[in-house]
Length: 263
Image (cartoon, rainbow, N blue to C red):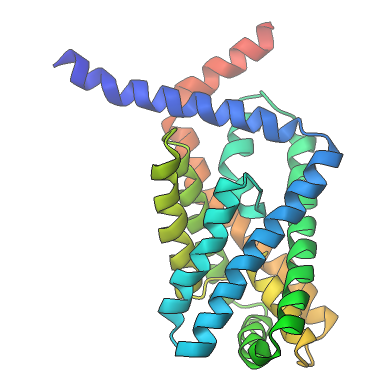
């Protein structure tokens, strides 16, 4: 009976240790490592977008296209690339536990976001040159997100987007099994795209694609979508999932802070 009661606490401690270890690694990466990692993250998402556009073009089904998109998140996981919204739970927990620097957290967010979008922009251009038949579906999809604008609806779509991906990260960090980690990568990325949630990287790549395909989207619309989606993603990922995770692990966080103070 005692063993059964202690097991959940042991699993929580192990998961917390994994978070701190990975968080320290991410926060301490030099800029020349962050840049290619972020660019590759955008490229991986771009591959998922290619699958999404092909299936959407051929079938017209948003749900089937969303399932096809999941190949991009599986690539992110297996290639150990990095996505902006994957950096909410892990490095934030590390910073709160005083095992990492808040300035480095901000650097990680900014560099990853910009390089994700840059890498994805290159890939969407390549896609449209290689497959001009996908221009129309790209334009329609990108315009949808560009026209969301600033509203309660678009912000809540962004909040949900950040929440979904951070929950995916939380589930993946609860295990060491790569096979198990692939399951939430497929399921949650399909939810993100199938529900047409607002994501700071994915949707900005699609907006860029729409512009390349001939849409009259303005730079102002692009920047508005980028900032608004990013803010909503942070609120959803940090304000909901990460905060509650930290509350649950409060004793461990306090222990780590005390160790840092006496070190």
